[in-house]
Length: 114
Image (cartoon, rainbow, N blue to C red):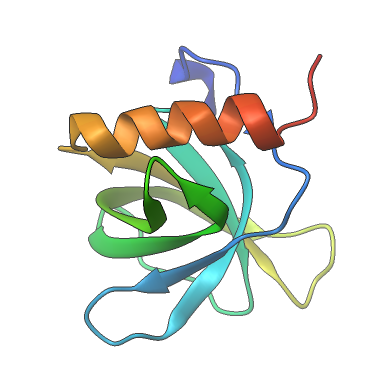
């Protein structure tokens, strides 16, 4: 699935926490992101091809928001380089225009520029 990515993911200078909107539990930490997808590192694996309702806590207020919510489909889940963790790839699903703009601002303001 990774070869289907159209946009280069950007690694942020912060590890941001991502939570399940329903349970409130932390799903993982954001490793990289685009307006189409993201990768998390997590202590627990997730079932692939499952849509999750997620909440991302921002490093600071962006466009008046301290967090954004979105749905994302788990596309793959593999053991991380550190065997105590899992890397999980998500495709964003039905993301709002506001959330996409905030992600763009997040990428521009808080990513390693290459």
